[in-house]
Structures are given as C-alpha cells and as structure tokens.
Length: 231
Image (cartoon, rainbow, N blue to C red; front, side, top):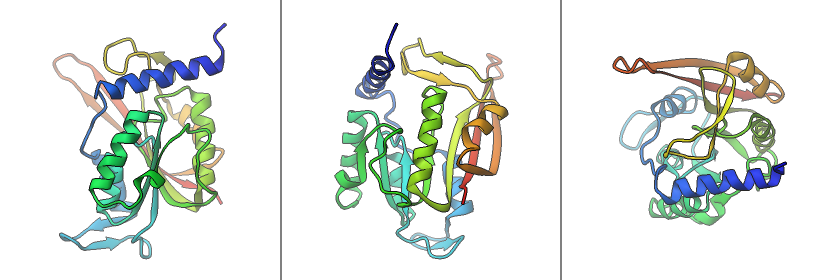
C-alpha cells in the first residue's frame, strides 16, 4: 500500500515537473480575480488612483494561496496591497521571487515561501484578505479541507477569501494528459463546496460560470466563491 507521505511526494514532484516545463507560466490575472478585487476591496479609478470599498486598504496584507509564478501577487501589488504567497513548487517560488522583486516588492524571500497548504509559515490573523485560483481543486479533498483551516487561521476575523473550483461533478481523478500530468483534479458540486467551507467560512457570493465549445460540445464549469471568515 502506498503511504500518504509517498503519495504527497509524488504529487509534489508532478507539480515541480509541470513548472520546470513552464506549463504553468501564466502572466496575466484571471478576470474573475480582478472582478473580486474591484467589487469587494478597491477599484482602480485612474492611472494611480483607487476607490476603496471598505476603509483604507492601502498596504493591506493579501495572501495568494498557491501563488505559482506570482501573477496575482503582481496584480495585488499594482492595486497597492502588500502581497504574500506560497506554493509547493520550488521553481514557481524562485520565479515569483524574481518577478515580484523586479516589480519593486521589498524582501521577496520574506513574502514568498515554498510551503504545504496544511502548514503555513504565517502568524494567526496576519492577513486582511486571501485569494486563490485553481489550487483547492488540484489536491485531494481531505488536504483541501485542512488547508481551508490553515488559511482561516492566518486571516483576520471577517476577512474575505476569493477562490475558484472546477465544477461538473464531485469526483477526483489523476490527470493523464501531458499538461499537469500525474497531478490530481478534484471536481466540486454545491454540496461538496458546502462541506469544504462550512467549518471556517460563510458564503458571500457563489457564481457558476459555464463555457461551451460549440465545436466539440465540451462544457467547462467553474465556481467562483467569495467567502468571509467566521467570527
């Protein structure tokens, strides 16, 4: 029988290979991520002016959960926040540190860490907000559930957390195609989403977006969630 530790190492290596092959070198923020920031945190109104949605959010510490090479950290920096991030992949972390450093983030090694979502290297209540794209659905559900607890621990009370999850079922499967080969894909139904978030978060927004390829007929479904930490 394969031990949990060896399974974790296999998946970690799969993500490392994916980043070494530059399969996940994405440089532009997701539209729904920008939409979340503009609706709930601050909206850009000019070249260097912003409209804050609650108080003054300048310099707010924002955690990017599974930051990859740092594209959403760059976005957070452009909005005037202080971004932090972590990822399993050493290649991703090294690239993110270089990129954020080139954009003026002081001490990128103190802001970007190689870490497991179950054991984050941050203090309780350290962040005013967290963001995550394509991460919590790329691991087994039990690990995602533990990770949600860790993210909640690092957030201030009532802080917001944006994340997205792939829809179209509630099963898990190992990716066998070339892109992200040997990584895990976890699909989410509404009930599975509720099981994931209920211990630590309340739902502010839950939006389901479906995209249909009218040639192949393939339908891709993704949930976009705005959550608020309980208490």
